[in-house]
Image 1 (cartoon, helix red, strand yellow):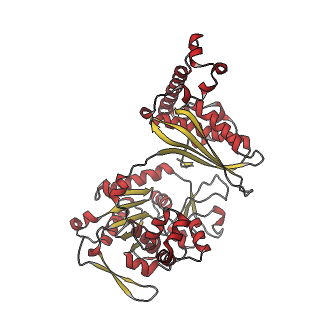
Image 2 (image 1 turned 90 degrees about the vertical axis):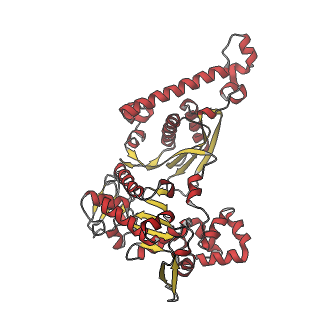
Image 3 (image 1 turned 180 degrees about the horizontal axis):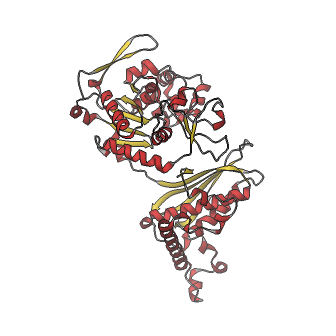
Length: 473
């Protein structure tokens, strides 16, 4: 903390000055976001300035309804939104269309993270996304002889000088204010840096609209507030002071976060994030299809996604006992998603068990009359293999219909295999087979071993094997 250093902030509403005293901050946070990251990388690769180059990142092989992954700051300055569909860009604009290169963007992100590591320890950074990071700079200000805003500017300049990508930054005494300063204030600042403390937040942003500009206020939350006549953070704060119970009725435990943020408060520290451990873990995949699929074709995609998740489970040594799926219908029909889950009698990673169960679940929960456009599959509460408990006859769904209902004892008397032992052996073989397939794919490529279903016309696995995040590598 540096005492005696301050920043004067103009109240845009009342034309009054507010002095931000950095010396009063217990901690200082910086939130840095890389400007139009994917588009900026493409400009850097071409030796062009993203601030003056009109460029969009989008797959030219898709239709003009495809969503642009990024738009250069130059195009944004001309009124083009951040993620438009290609047809929404005025035809009078001349621009470069760059196909997505996800591996390249990840390489750039890693190099930028290395820049931060030259000055900041990993325990004081939280990577929020590929292009955004939170940094607790409290312990570094004195050594650098900088105030929090100067530290943000220094890190931004280092990234630009060494990588060529420009950034925006927010500075605040907590992570929420740093994030809001970046999201709302920085974009209107000449130096692309925004600074907020609690008082400046109330002065500048309590009456800001729309509410969805604020971190963690989604459209659904904003609509619920609008129904009761609230459209600003000031309104939320006043409601909290007047009738806090109403907020808890509306949002449950999330009301605590909403109330804190309405006042510019955020109790979470960087150490809390670093020390957090999930009580349960899951593994998921989602896919938005490029066209409307028949119900039968959709089931094929569900099976493909399940098979890939099973192999991923084997690769990381995890098991699951419950899988949930969600299926979205064609955009032409205003229908709710079909959802459901299926449980198994044991923890497993075997595709031979999970795939048929998911296919059956899909068949049961979907309306076969309507085409499918989106699928999501989640392997819930996954656990390490060594955490699997001993299986018993009562655990095994396969063993419940053993040999026409014969008991375990009867089967032994008749010289038949113990169903528990037999199932254990089969699952062990299945897991070993999946490990072997994973090894071959790692050595020779993802297409080295595929299932017959992956060769069907509607299948997407082979295409997606050459994508990262649903886009070309």
